[in-house]
Image (cartoon, rainbow, N blue to C red; front, top):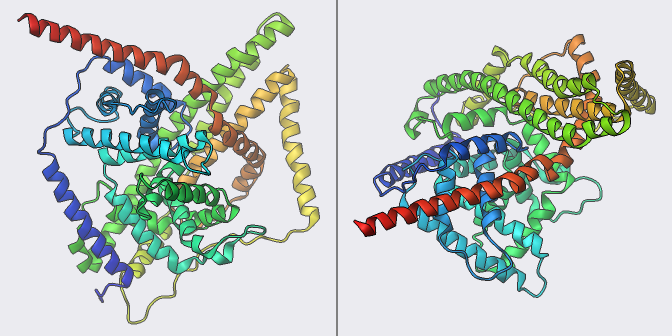
Length: 531
């Protein structure tokens, strides 16, 4: 069997060697002095963060970054030009008590690095707003908070594996995707932005990165210093424009639909738990065996992730519904009918949660044909053959031309499905407000369930044949998925429950715990003075 590497295989070899050198550096780092956190307030902080994360409409791997961002939003004032002092220590204490990081796991020199980062980016904010044509202050504030949250997390947990994977994935997709062919009507994009759009697409599709991460890493790629206000403005503004384009969204969808082999390759070679070394690439058969095992592991992990996602989605729905019930449904019932309509209230509370549990628990993992296809594709990516196999064509999204009759028929059936649900609710004595709440929460549940099902789709290279039952199910769900997508997109921006928790609970809670810690330290110092 030919063991000669392709150019992509050679690149992978070099990236793995870089990762191994970094891991050795990290081992040496563990011998440094570590920052210790007293346990005061641990239980309360941990319980609150579990509640807060249940209301957070985001990917699980972004929770630490969001917690860091909330800390900086709460503790940094962008009104006073006086630079904040010693916030890093308080941040590490808060993250440790909330169980985002383990106690005695962060080197003390990293605490100083974070303090320096805070001072640097705080000063950058005032440089940006002092420019001749500055962005709005709120926009500049969001830029700085993005960078503070992401780069603080990177100091705590360096992202060498992510950077290496991005390097490899960009090299792969730049060979297969021509951005110019996918530019959408009425969007005029400069050719110099094509690589950036592809980079954004890889981040969003394969890494599920949020804009804050992409923004930070783009600035790093351009070597942008916090002291260069004009360059900070130029790159941030360009990024904000590109990420909102329909063309970028199309690139994301193409990569997402053709990302199974890259996702498995990432888990095999670029995950934090990966034990694969550069030397393994000299054994083609062993690489195939490890890739196959990774696929099986990924199927199992996806099942577990689905279960966690179901639980989080149910808690999210119950919390949001409880808030809506107390704020709208119960007051409306009392004002109009002088009593609480318990049956609609209970149905609205529990049916969406049961719906999402039922629809997602029936999902099946891909089969052997899919596993074999991924193994074959990765082998062709990394190793040369005397008679190379035909390259797999990327699946795209060509706009199908359907007759107007199809469109009208679908619209009628769409309305009919919603109408049938409304009719059923009227038979159960639902009023207008209760019907509206039911449709909103059923649609949100349908969309959340659909998002969870995409985790299975992301591992597919061989599409499974749809049965008549699944086609009927998809048709009935589609109206609610569409409505749920619109609701969730807008909810993600405002998230009333999260804002309520941040302002009514988190701010006083974290402030109180901070005062308790300071008072405890004060008493401890007084005791030492007496002795």
